[in-house]
Image 1: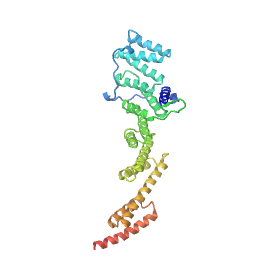
Image 2 (image 1 turned 60 degrees about the horizontal axis):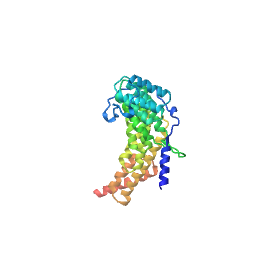
Image 3 (image 1 turned 120 degrees about the vertical axis):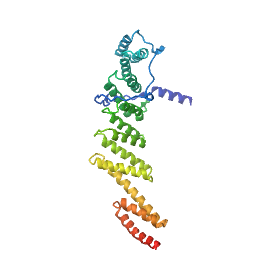
Image 4 (image 1 turned 180 degrees about the horizontal axis):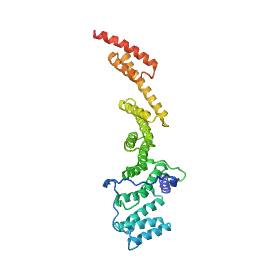
Length: 340
């Protein structure tokens, strides 16, 4: 048992992030974001003070910045990161501090420490607004989030990495908070929905897709968001087929999508979902009416159920429709005799 534990510890130490295709991640064209108010809830801890393990090597911020750059040029990335961080801690209010913070984020990205790099980029938004290139930093954050969403988390020796797109959820949420009206904020919002959907969190996915449709006007993304919302609601209905609210919500979303985007590539799939839903609900409504009619012997309840079937589902099954109409006439006569 102890040998097995040692082996697992060794494997975990050898685990390395999957680095495939990072440079091929899509990079959106830069666009100046709209500034938003930040709250302390989303801010990191402020860097301030001198610590023995972050002590600057040189006497001034200018020289420390140059020192960090020389280390970076020599590809001594860990030492460069330490140098830049020491500058930000020691001289947080200096003109060199935001430059060092940006350089620190870039070094961490070069070291393939992507989550750390994202956080260091975010520190610029939280504590140095207006003192860095917003377009550049948003671009890098977006690229990191896409990479973490689409790349397996880790590999251990001969074991392949496993997908973990949920790692990117807080990153995309942060990007949207940073720049809610940025050109690619809608894409980030769509990514939130896709991650929730792929994880089976359909209600969260529906909420994300609804935000996209209500907030943005990206004609290339709106049809996809509408279909994905309808698809998630359909899956919720399939999990709860007897829930009337789930059924109505799925039907309304599917009908809305079909009416709004009749030429979209997933239109046939949506029509199939709607047909399946209507067939299942029609059969269920008919069986309910038949139960009241033949088993429970409750003609008034049977009339109501048959009437609902004929109103909503008469065109789906001609044979059942004919039987339902015949039974309605018979039941009307029976109930009229009871009144007399």
